[in-house]
Every structure is written in C-alpha cells, then in structure tokens.
Image (cartoon, rainbow, N blue to C red):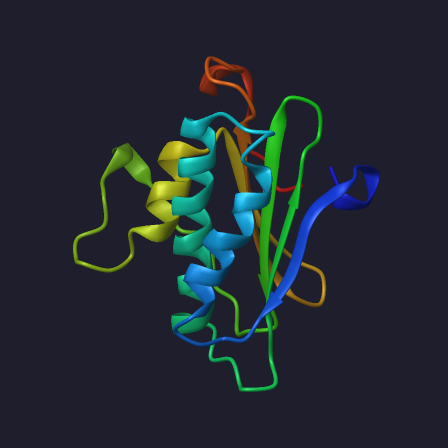
Length: 148
C-alpha cells in the first residue's frame, strides 16, 4: 500500500549522523494520542533500529538524508525508513535464530515485533514495517509479510 493513498502523519529528513536515531524517535511523539502506549514504544524501538542501520551501514555522505515517513492506514501504523545508500539483500531468519553478534539485531527485531515488513527500492532503499494501532489488533498469523 503506497503511502500516497493515506494521510502522512510524519515525514522528516534526517542528517545521517549520530543524532538521527534520537530525532527519529522524538518525531513519533506526535502520535501519542493516536497509538496505544505499547504500539508507540515498539514503533520507537524499530524506528531507532532502522535509522541506525541507515546511518551506520548505508555509506551515506553529508549531503544525503535518511527519510522517515509514518502513515496510519486503517488499523495499522506504517513506517518507512529510506536512504539513498548502497542497499542490501533481505536477510533470512530461518528457524527464528537471532543474530550471532552484538550487531545485526535491527532487522531481527523488525521481523519479530512487526506484523508485516519488507524492503524495496524505487530510487531509494526503503525498509518498511506495520504494527497494529491498538493492542490486541490483528494477529501475526492473519497478516502476511509482503513487499509492498
């Protein structure tokens, strides 16, 4: 579901530096009245992980920006983190095994906490995820993972 079909709640461009994850988390404060506390905290954690991945791994220059877009389609919060970086292949989380080291947990957390997530490129690398807007929302089994 492209974001253009629903109202964008948050749309920010962040400098790719050490302040970006905290600024991205802070931008989600605008959703406090629209999301449950649990959903908001999960969104903050996952946004922080994905923005950190962009800053650390995307080989961005000082003129590049990390994008954060949040929309609220029916029943979910959808988050997209984009960057013009080098990209990567979708990791495999076979057998639910966690990463072996201290890094590499960001996408593992996205995989475990979100109901749907995916990666696509359309001029920019994008990792997106969706969470239910209310506690007890759609079950993980009822929403399939996708690439949209």
